[in-house]
Image (cartoon, rainbow, N blue to C red; front, side, top):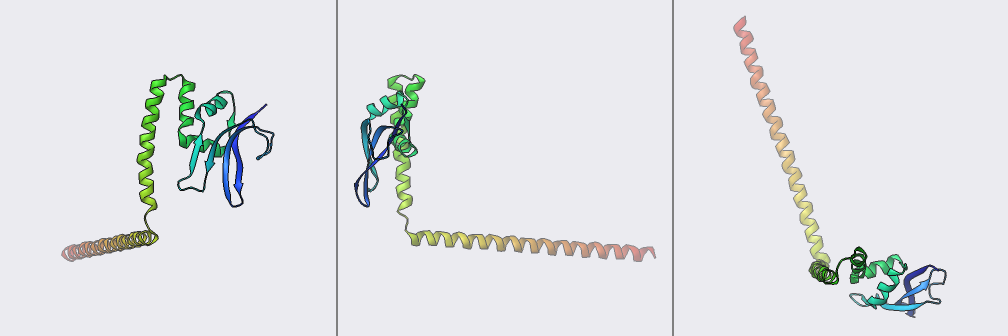
Length: 172
């Protein structure tokens, strides 16, 4: 029997809440399941994921395959990382230190994402406008530099031409 870790839709119309379940791959989405492993609420900001970590690890170690969405939720909680480290045979204290370090990195990057999201549309428009004007300035500078180079080449060609005319006049 193939076991999948997947989402089971619950809740009212337009207000979904999902249970994370271990189910037979042949059973329907909202049908019979073997065990409830957690809850996922996408409507909260940020979304909430509550998982029974030990039971998820049990099912993963016994060959259960998570769906793409469940896999991404498990990755966000760090359960996938922990599972990979246990499969490699890493000691428990090292796993905990790795997870602590991962959580620090996750929190640091999460704060940057929040700061990026807070930028208003008007601010984005101003930044884009300034980028466009900066591009226009660099293009105009490039064009003026090319014109200066072309003028310099013409003047050197004229000087060379005048010098060759003088040499011809001397020969005659």
